[in-house]
Length: 101
Image 1: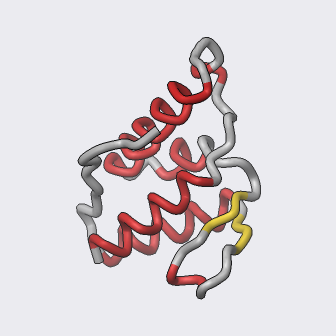
Image 2: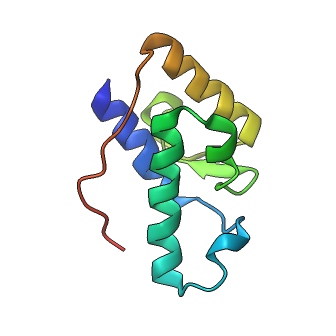
């Protein structure tokens, strides 16, 4: 389960949109790292609504749950998916070991 969540999150990061003005003063590489850290912070707190605000709407996901091809998902669909994961594992979380900008 942990590997599946890690893959889901890692592939989701690929499609994150630059939706937050708090990253405006950073260069592109710094923005990507800051957004990835914020995404994992919200994920681990189960703050799905805040987390999906970091994604474009819709966002493209490459997730084993959806098959071998990338799929477009709305923010609402992404929230529902993560609420479902939380229902299966109440303390669902992911740890970031290293970020490669």
